[in-house]
Image (cartoon, rainbow, N blue to C red; front, side):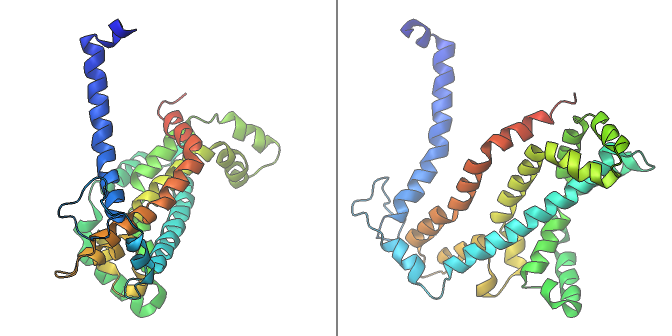
Length: 285
């Protein structure tokens, strides 16, 4: 056993693996350490703080100018609604491209992917003016609203998600729908009673990937939201360290640790479905 461990190929492989693990874990440990350091600074920060305390966590929830709990709720609201709508819209589009044959099908698929190549930041001025125009007619979907932010997120959510879900739908035999049709099911009944239950893993994957992307998105939310009570978590966190003379690195670290909890919980609950959904659609059966 030890002889195999000392072989150069085996040894180098494990050295690289452990270096990658340390490289990934060390920043997390550093943030955890800073959250328990009452000095509230990153100058002279140690991996193990000399006088650890919960002072930064108390400051986080007792600061009326930084409503952290509201920011978390705002982010969960936007992320959950966006992810649910993305799964709904993407599943309908992917099913159409997977099962139907119509003129412009290939062109539509490649057009969706091509548009996705351009980041939304290129259209930021147009997006801003569009939401300004919409807000004059529908106040709930204008600037500085969660409804407007959700609309913007939905606009850039198709692309890769449609291709990923279409690849999964292609692996489901059409004979199942044919059998349901013989029993009197309509096309839409075949979709939500046959295809969707069998596609649960990929639906979970799309939901989870969109949730992460929306939960941590900063640039669009920073431009489109301005009121303190409607900010998302990513934008709100920046306010802790955005002040030139009052940077709160310890409180920022504590907020980052608590803010990451929803994603960790969601991943723990959905990890089995995630593995299945990401691997099955890779090769068409």
